[in-house]
Image (tube, rainbow, N blue to C red; front, side, top):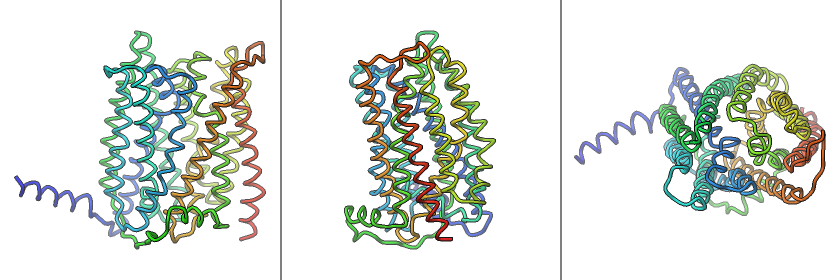
Length: 446
């Protein structure tokens, strides 16, 4: 028996853990495997965030305020990123660490979706949801610098715009198809008074996607990398080093401003759609499907634009679009939500189609090559803190507005509408910063 275990372990090591790309075909196959990883990972994330998570938390008994705070926990969990970066800095091989972390990360999400049918009290369900979501995102933050560095090592700089646009395109198509099916299932079971069963069905889908995701990562090869040991740098000194770096600091400020501004609204928006506007899951899923198709159409154009200009310029345009859409949400009430919600959502997703890959690539443009994983990890932690503070600001607005009655279009204004206005104008400030500081410095460097 011991011999068999040893033989299996050696075969696994040879097939998955130690495979190094030796030619362009190996690199191309690995890039394709990372596309499968991206499509499944993005879809898993969508099924356990946004309106899906808001609906799940409502089913297990979380209040509106607690719903928003739990939804924002992933931002605070980014504090774990520097620890992952330290680990990545003085290890040449990252693959098995990433694969194991990704499996546990997705498994925790699957467990959360089964909470509605667990034979425990509602307060305990809410507590477990908060713990599992926070733990999963902490683990995601730990493996993120290693996973990002692994992916970047497979994609030459000259083809990143085209590759990341293609990866995003396939992710969006997968996301659209599966979230539409998920929304349909939730509405089906909701109509039968068994919404909790709908979330279990979503949990089964997430479990299957997890298997595909981890297998794709296992089949991805990992190039050999030079050891970049930063073990002698303390955590405090790492933060100081990154913040004092004049080259990287503008990116941290920009991403921090974006996260803070966007998160004033985002954690609370899903519950507004479901609870206050009474928009069905299927309608939300249809809109999500339409916006995904839109993203799929425009994402390659964003990539081409980035190749011609810069990812910083693309970030500015994307954030401007998102800012305007958030201001539009201020005017959304039950009387006009049937057309304003899909219209604003379609418009905003011109920006959301670009912002993820734009920020991902911008951080690599600004981070120095030496110690890059550490810079990325610390940057994620700092901007995550600011994002969580944005969510706290949103909760403060909700608390203050709870006892204030204003009207627009003969409808009482909800706190989420005020949040959307604050969020939109704060995002415009971020746009001004990018234009006047970051792009000015880039032009001076040219």
